[in-house]
Length: 235
Image (cartoon, rainbow, N blue to C red; front, side, top):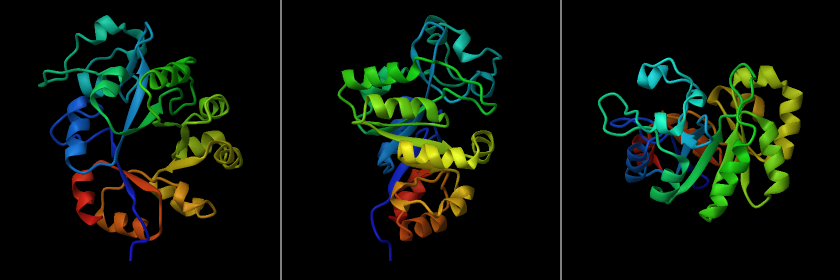
């Protein structure tokens, strides 16, 4: 039998009929039973907080520009192909989505290059303005450690995949986990994290009901999923 409630977190919202990391995708996720939403945050050239996953616009706009090279005035004119909406700001999300968020800071790419040195301060400042207590996550441990010391009232989590472990080193990862709190690993990394308390582990991406049931029985804290509409039927 399942040993407890497992939080189902919508990975960039529910993007079946809408574009990921947008207000419509977030609203669809909530309609389909999501407990919380995971989203990604970049900065525009002039410092606007933008909800978007990639560093460039190739995949979703078929454009070669990098998001950090464009101003907010340039970005807000863009519409996703076939849609009447574009990239939202984090403030847009705070205004329209009243549910717990997992806010991923895109301060380090897969090659270890760092971006947006003031991003975490801006995100927390905006969160405080709106009275929110969302969870702040990142593949980059440094802003999370800084945050936890400066704003201990928030919850923080370290994203992990095979590339980030190789880059940071497993010994360093263990140190960071002790300093930060939650760990959000790719599902295929769970076997190496058995030494950690499962109530602090949130694996991604979990779309298979059988895997969801297994993780629920093992008392993991939650799962991040592309298909909250399916998993919600197996609570």
